[in-house]
Image (cartoon, rainbow, N blue to C red):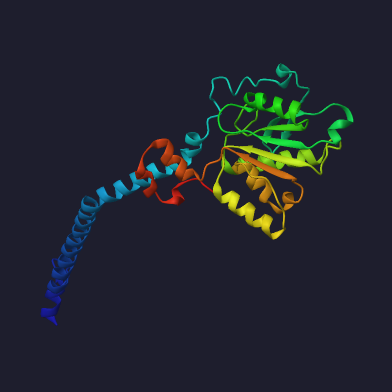
Length: 282
């Protein structure tokens, strides 16, 4: 008992047994080594994989930036200069017109011209919804509309897409489809037009997918329509709520699809190896 007392008490101070002291020091040394090994492991992982992760993040950022910038690469509402400020008026060509603004389905303010035949004659003739092509604004197409008005003796509704001319917003494929729907809805509210003969005329901005989709729909309903090219016109006429209300569709100067157009414009065969999901192409 006396020997045991001298083992635990020394100079009136409580002391740990030797085996407890040694195990505590070993544990502290092992913890320090483990922490150091962990830090070194993370450092080595960062050293070998950090470059690869950084490169992957950089590539993903570049792809995301290009994808979200495609609208700026595809559409040219600012060419020629002042196209977003000055829109030629139909009166410059001796055409009677109404200068109107309507709301798109998402609330975007759209500019349009309504050019009507005089008097009750406007109720007897077809009405053309004119969907212009890329670049400029609808006023730059008035030379074509003069022929429609004087030679074909029809009414013309000219729509200015979002981001073009005096319309608000920025150009986008989805936005164009909403704008065209708003224009048709506007025509259907007019009691001074022949609602049984609505013609949708689309120039450029075309896509074979829409032509195939609309052609299949027409076969189901045994309808016969006129084709010449224009993605917005085709998409509009392919919708169930409008297909039976549109008398004729004319598409002009279309192209097959955006990826094919990119290869043609950039003159590079390498673009055909880019996955289709990277294109903003419905």
